[in-house]
Length: 189
Image (cartoon, rainbow, N blue to C red):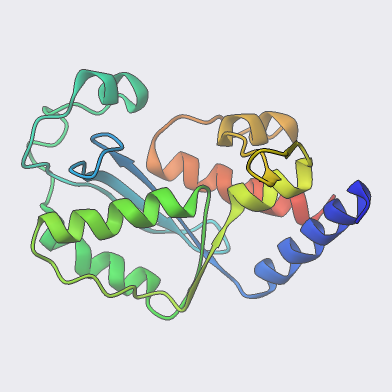
């Protein structure tokens, strides 16, 4: 396949995903390890309307390294609901929908992990999921021969590539909107 074919295929896939009226999700977390938790979650619908936006109380302190990334600290979470309270709202927002996420593997792992660490049964409420990051990697076309796949690029990189006005803020609602704009930019290119 020629590089332009990969890009055209990415555009076709983006249009298909958009035709399914996906919802968009992003999380902020205490870190990336198997014991880390979701501390903020947001879901937007295809029109950019916020279906869910919530901080989530953490049973463990937020490490300073994580706070440096997203700006959320323990004080922000003092009045936040706990995960067992947020999970039903998240299920309602995602129920039966197509889910579009920038770096879906990470966010879905952290959702599943957070459920497990809180004793909440994990049953994916969405019909199917789609990774915008992998699609942008295909669209951008930077091949990694050792991994035999396209190199992943950050959400910040993707937004700047398309000259999108929404910054990568490392806050769930704003990054969900940026993810939506990236998918739309791929489809409209």
